[in-house]
Image (cartoon, helix red, strand yellow):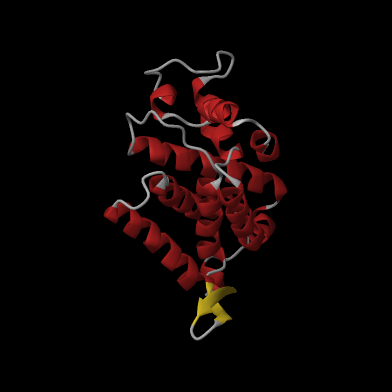
Length: 198
């Protein structure tokens, strides 16, 4: 989807984002849906198929690649699809809740990917994740997932509180992360331990 989107001229790119992104006033039916045949609620899913640029896409895919396969194993293929889409919808609703009169489009899979990270904290908190850390030079540092992802979610709250980068949907990240914890608990395979079995 992004490859198609990236081939469009800038004005068409913006039109796609407006048509298929999640705009709070459109979802709340305060403003007409830009695509007449698309139900207002559909943008709660379609927004997650769009991205602002290649860096946005690749960073989401990196996190999905690192954490997603373990969550899919813990849930099963079909439940993982339901989980992922559920996280996308709940992340969009969190963004909407704190931006009721927002008129700009929310785009990107970050909320759904944050859900995968929330599920990882619940199911695999002690798994080692290699993080590039600069001490004297860049070295891979193995950290428990709980600490790495805990730092990540704490940074989302920090940036939200200091008002950093208003173009970033901090509430979608936070809402997706929380949704991932709850949905993973509800959808995990029977017998899959939480908190790494400890």
